[in-house]
Image 1 (cartoon, helix red, strand yellow):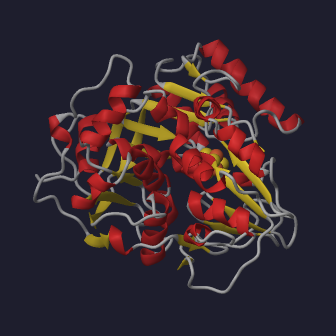
Image 2: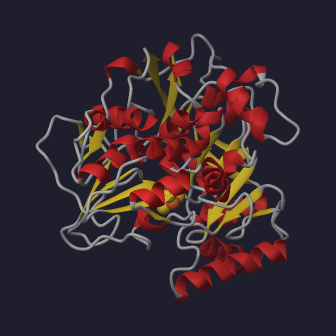
Length: 431
Ligand code: SF4
């Protein structure tokens, strides 16, 4: 039977020759993820169910990133609960704040070499779908699923149907993975890929850096997808060879989709036709091209998160901000996605650029992305953010507004004080 990449990974982990959309399968897991919000309830369920030991202490990653460093007493208690569980269970991949390898979960797991092509990964966080960028099947689950999986190492899946996203062309200047996924979500809607696998294929794949692919898969859930996945190519192997301890040479041969794999439909995207995109409040699908709407003045800019907190994002932000100032009255907050990203920013002089331009630079944390801290919005405030959700109240008061963009639009907007095309800054004297 011909299969997609997702079907191949699922059938292999269920020890089946094949599987088809709609099949219910019990599959073994390569990696489980929890954070400081979702792990404490999973621990409660794990313990109340009478489990004593996790199935494998080297296949669980626990990351206190959402409200950590602790924002209040409740978050301190949640982190403490997770920390104590990690110690008791001798969890190998528990990341303490400040330690090397720590940061926002979906930034650090690939960067720490915990994700390989063909892996089956679940995480009690909806943006676990990020790891499809490396040819893995990864998806978000609830705390109850995490609890059961921590005990058994397995979980149930309904095999999803697949949508092929056929990419052609090359990205124009100031357009990146964030614009590609916002464009796709704008085209198909927030439920356009409901419980489907989004498989990215075509000549255009090779034009996307790993940072672009990670951003694209990160937001697959924002159009309802069960997962997003890219084929493994030279770019993947080059990335993995630096991240996987001992290196990584070649992708599993079985992983590529069959030529006659069945897709529910194909969405064609010419990368060269995409402009910098902005998702208006209050849905990621509410997209408009930069320059196609009247001037919108803003109060705050946030650059970071599991969507756009990688070193490539920091470099782009610095390239816009270098020698310029954040406009008076605007707060610009930069959140490097991990300790490693933070250190690299330090080495490359990017932190100096950010501070000189008038930005706040935060420790790696989810912080404002979910309205936690480090940039919560007041009623009526408008924020341009490189995060992935702009629902009502996502970053603070329900009367605030979040506009999702890529890094360069966000950085240019902080300089100009309104949602701006970075190309405007090429004309000197603009600010
Ligand atoms: Fe979730 Fe935002 Fe944290 Fe990503 S950065 S894991 S979207 S809260």
